[in-house]
Length: 536
Image (tube, rainbow, N blue to C red; front, side, top):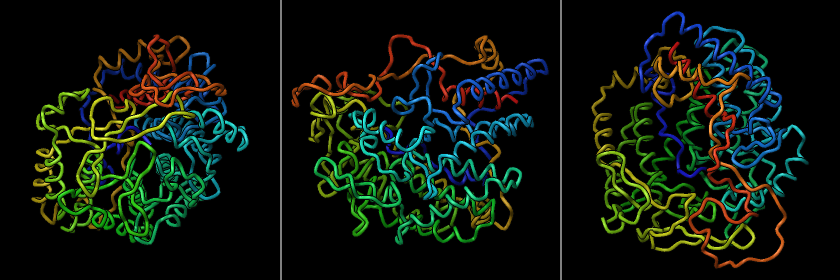
């Protein structure tokens, strides 16, 4: 689970290839000489990542240049492979993107190496955990019992379940990549792993239409006096929209009619999960028996989430465009009214640590108590996982630094988007949706999101910044305390770490690196390659 409720604004209608891939910038065609330099730089950087950095086709997030330390969301062993973005599946995606841009078989073969790693790490159930370890399950369990268990704010790593997770898109990003590998050349090598993950998705869906965070279901980690949340129906971090997107890709690229029913069942569940007025938003998790808002980690209280609500409004607009069913539009006005009603007064907004970015942004509490509409602001005390604890109150000041207790939403922009979608004609809707169109709609050629502007100046900067060894070095954004056993005692009422990213030296959670240390960043490699691809 990440800091934000949803990692991206899901746009199935664009992303499913229905309206083509949307780019924030249109790149000019480079000169012939620059094009040659771009291709050479791409190849050199990719060779370094595959031959020097990768471990048997797998990646984590960041590496020190001498590979003496490496991190995913937490510090990792050299033999570990990370699934969460920007991890191994995203490297596979950008390699396929590079293959499409250049026609160079090298990138396809590199993508095959990544696919091989993912297949090795696929669990028997068909999904993936956040991370797997080529050293074996006992090594992974030992890592969970040390580094994972002592990550104060990353509670999802404090217990080893041994099952798969939908959280943070790791399973679905891998599934989409294996689907792309299969349909690229109709290579039967990838059919068994692909069918395995499709069965995983179908088997793990609840009859009502949602999915748990983890599957097969386990209930063995009650935490902080609360039931194990991993079986709850989960919207947080794109669980349902990511699965719907994957199944829609399977429908349009493989003709799998069996997935349409589960997709529609999940989409219509989203209507049911909206809360009634005046707090007509959506929660991050729901209990299965009564579909009521539920808790997750100890700093994710049972609530209606305003950030999630803003994103689901856009999701409902997408589902309307996929189905032409106006029921997906019916709850949007009440949801926008709810967001507007939660605007904090100027005296409260002045306490917040950031300012609005766009005209029309308003500051709202992130977590809203479902019955009363009161804000739930999250705080913590203590020094590490052994003595620390989280709690909520109605005070916006001094909230935790690693998970936002307030967020900006833009009701005016949501109303404009709502009105624009309402005006689409039946013919326009039919042309955009694989469920309404009789035409074959291929998968997008490029899956990797573009960050930044692709210009010749950008290309020359990336060409010149490649090291003699063949990699890009960038400042390390986050580091961590190495694991050390906890001995001694500390004050559970300590407030020194109330707003920091990390506690004392026993906390293995990552925190901002400020000493100028350079690293090999997988995220930067992916984006640099994507910028160069855009110019081609």
